[in-house]
Length: 148
Image (cartoon, rainbow, N blue to C red; front, side, top):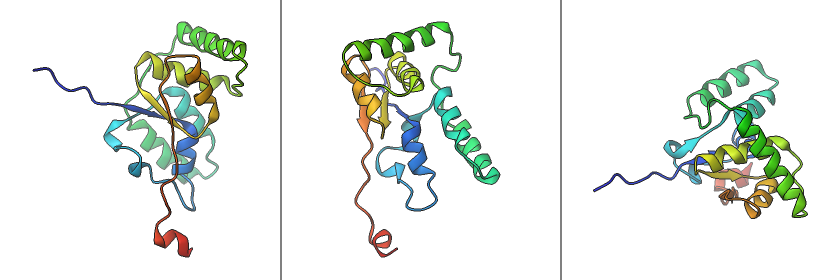
């Protein structure tokens, strides 16, 4: 009997931004198990470059560094695939505002992992590729959140 394959999820920057918010952060654990989360280098860069506060930056850096990494050695072929994915979406009349989103999508496609996001670019990319994408919806607010 073979081992069951665990479904891994690449959490996009658009979700991490919500998770690291100071007020009313997104509860990522309500959406997926922490052990099922992976990341990639472009997500780490995007997340870390957004921190102004040095202490918050260090905490985020430590947290992101603890996650399993897909595509740890991005080479020319990944960038070429990302460019082709961007061009494919454009030919289909779909707008992708960030070339980095295409690179993140390529990391997910190459490793057969789903991307959880809050960015419509991934929905467009999933329409023209093998990308599996799921929008991260906020769970209903807790009573405590409603009172603040």
